[in-house]
Image (cartoon, chains in turn yellow, red):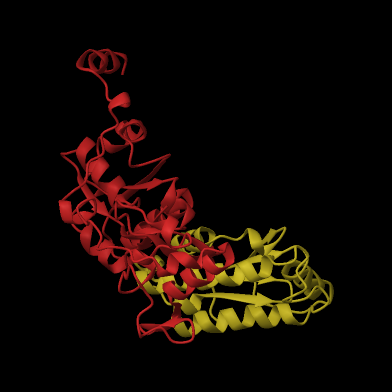
Length: 138
Length: 234
C-alpha cells in the first residue's frame, strides 16, 4: 500500500459512518489515508462537494450510504447514486478518471464492509496514480 | 417556459480559451426549472471550469452570479460590478438572456453556455416536452388544448396522417401522435364535431415568416418624458 494517499469518504450517520464505527469497535484494520466526513444522509451530497474534494487534491472520493430501500430518509441513497453518476460524467469530460469517484451502500451492522470499501478505493488509486491536480501543483 | 440543454464542457473550454477572468452568469427562471442554468448549475459549471483550469494550468479566475431573470435589463444591471473586470461571461441563461447581457455589456464577450431548445413544460421530473411553437395565431380552442403545430411532426392542421400507428407517430415509436391525442381530448370534451371542421391554411406571418417579431403594448410604453424621469431615478 502506498502512503500519502488522500481519500475522502462522505458517510451517512446511519449506514456508512455506523459501519466505520463498528469496524473500529471490532478492531478491523483499514487504510489511514481515508478522511471520513460524516453527514446526516448521503442525499445531502451534491455534485459540487465531489468536484471540490477532487479539486482540493483528493485522490478518490466515495459516498457510503444505507442499503437501497433502507435509507433512513427513504430515498437519500438513490439521490446520492444519481449525483455520483453526474459527477463521474463531469469528471470524464474534464479529463479526470471517473473511477476516482464511487458510491457504496452499506448497513450499520456490516462493520466488515467498511474496510472492504476503503481497500477498493485504495487499490483504484494505486492503479490510477495520484490525482493529476496534485501533479500540476495546484 | 423556455427549455434548454447544456453545451458539452469541451465546447465551453474551447470557447473560453484565451480569457483569464471568466464570469458564469445564471438565471433563476426557466433554465433553473429545467435544471441547467440556475444558481446550483452556475456553481457546478464554475467548479468544472476551475478544475479544468487547475488541471491544465490555464490560470482562469472564475466567478459566479445568478440573477432573477437574465432576459430583463433591470435584473441584469444588478451584476454591473461583477462584470467590470471580466474577460468573458459564460451565460447559462437561454439565448434571450445571453443577448440581453450582450446588449447591456457590448464590450464584453458573452459566450452561450446552453443550447436553447424550445418552449415546453416538465412532463415528469427530469423530462421536458416541447408544447408550444409560438406560431402567433393560437388554435388550441379547435384542437382540444393540444398544439398540432409543435406536437405533430408535420404540423398538420387537419390530421392525423397515414403515419399514425397505434397512437404513435411514424417518426419515433416513443412519440405520441398529436392528432390521436387531439381526437381523445375532443372526445372527452364532447366536441368531436370539431374534428370535422376543416382548419384553413394558416397565416404564418405572425410566426417567424414575418421576420423577428415585435409586440408593442401601447398602454405600457413610456413617453420620452417618462423615460427621462425614469432614467433620472435609475
